[in-house]
Length: 494
Ligand code: ADP
Image 1: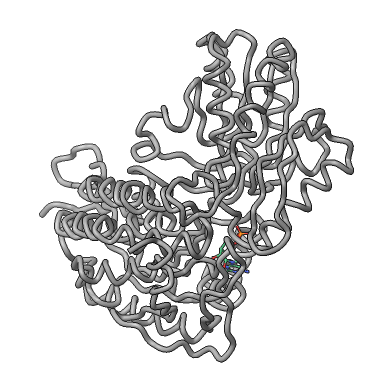
Image 2 (image 1 turned 30 degrees about the horizontal axis):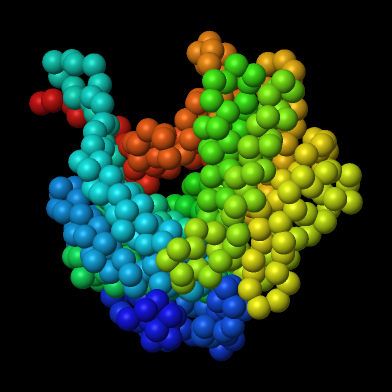
């Protein structure tokens, strides 16, 4: 069956998945799910309600307290997560198709997410599940003191639409590995693969009610989850504006801790001693076009030494021009539409703001206005730090170019946004690389590596976002610890 035939046969079923089965939402209003490649309707689904959330949280609490998951040994939980990884791979075509139809990701990339990216994260947390080791206090003949990590209880998770299946896994894998019960609210633009993941989790052996999914809007389900008094931890990935609202909602309810991974406006800093400008050009373009630029850690600001700017920019423009948007259901497509009409309008608005502010569009990609949310890569030269295109997260294939002459200028430009998520530095001088890694206020720093060449640190090494990009460690062992609570226990001997 071709992808197009398979797309026509999808049995859309977007309802809350609570206690191991689909239930009808209590909502009476509906949200229209749109395919951004054609702007046609895929289905309508209930917007969700606070009552849906309350049912899911009650079930999650009951299951957590029963201990059917939280009291298993960590190795048993790890086995289940590995089985889930295998099932995700087995169902990769179905999962990939759902993500492609709902948010426009090219099917080849969606298959990679389902067959590799998401299962890799599940397996990584399965491997770490047995590593929540505490320290013991100084020895004394009569006392014993030590730390334990324990699950927090009910974790609420709210995810965005840019990597639907991966975003769901990034939240539920550490939460489940640490022994929690979960209520997940996926983005309203792309809820289906998370629902399928919950079905597969049940099949893999996660007990009923331990992993629940409540689809719906931020203003209905998201807010209800954030202010629910019986949620013990809220984990969020999305915009800074929403992240800050969640902090308020937490404060107004039970003061639950919040993990926030918000946006970014990350720099690609290039010094004039780099030996291979082609490699830098490849990495720069790849970072800006990956997922149509809808990646929070995309390096959307090129900060380049004046001496190499012209040569590098010419290489970048030549490469970026080749990204012609295409039908995401075509396996040859590497660059698809943006995720929604709203996203296209947002990116279009920023491009217009850039031009009106006097930036020079050295590459201006075409924007399809109807029947498909296609926006080709755009590159702005001669931008100034005060322009909105340089300060704000666009979440589309738009690169801004700025020049520097000294290391101090490079650092000042790199830090000249509110965000602090990631940065890449290209220099041959190791001391300078280290100095910049220290001076740039961001959590994830790469020196002379592109995303594809990077170490497996995406899985093993944790980092914390800084400034408006959020806080709290995710990924790796520290990420697992974020979903646990730390106790110290002291015994006095007889
Ligand atoms: P984006 O602009 O990338 O969609 P958002 O922060 O708006 O980022 O959305 C990320 C996630 O947060 C989505 O699941 C969305 O439904 C949810 N969300 C949006 N607004 C709220 C809100 N006020 N309260 C809780 N969740 C929200």
